[in-house]
Length: 348
Image 1: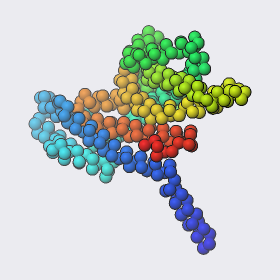
Image 2 (image 1 turned 90 degrees about the vertical axis):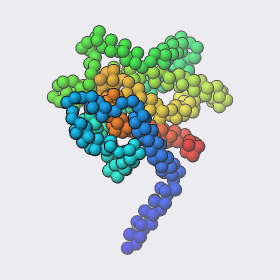
Image 3 (image 1 turned 135 degrees about the vertical axis):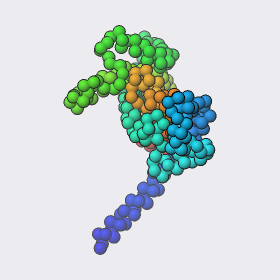
Image 4 (image 1 turned 30 degrees about the horizontal axis):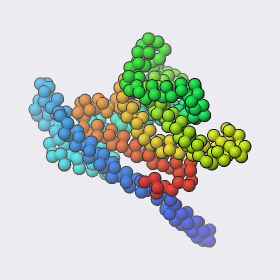
């Protein structure tokens, strides 16, 4: 009996500590704000699709092989015989009560199942690009700052300007031309080879990685160029601060001054950009996927837009909004972990 009472009191104390924790309160607040953002994103995507010219039904009407009776059945099946407001609230109610984003007009399948099939490929490409970009851009940004106004710094500045100045679709076209010249060295199209199912688990990983090389380069170049310049500028700004000069005057090794004292403060603004970086990578992935025939969410969304597959387009846009919100939330929590002096309420 005593042990049970102690356990209950311990559990109660833990629960009280959890719900009064600054981080927990902040996460709950952000998630509640996210509900309003997602609602507005869904409403905007719905009415943009409705206001855009043409409809899926119009395509069917022009098809002489489909009878008017069949078109009327399709109208009733997808609720297109109702008013816009009724269609929107019916779609929204299905999402909230059943987690159902509707049925795709073109694929005649659940939109949710289509998204679950394609989202992993897009996230794989975006997250791999994020890690690659940061792993290369941060060290090169530090190197450029340390070697300020020297040949190394000037070469890196030229590369960063070139990377930011060339649109991603031009880079993708150049890489496609490069793949054609070097064929069959770099595969283009899909994310696996024909014999992928016959490979070992390690061979399957290598196969996907090999197919991902060119899309990864196309997606990462612009982000890498911008991140490297920001890292250089932030570190140069911190290196001019009085406390850095004091650390040097005390005789601390230069490596310790740069990598322990300066870098920790210079990296904070970059962590803040992490959420937006994920969003830009997702939008960039949409372009890259179509050039390299990568079977992700971007390619699916473009096909849905062209076919006026309303529920599929709306669900894709809502999914993008959710990923953006999660990316920003993770970035804020990482910033708090990197610098405990920062208060989460100041990040709102």
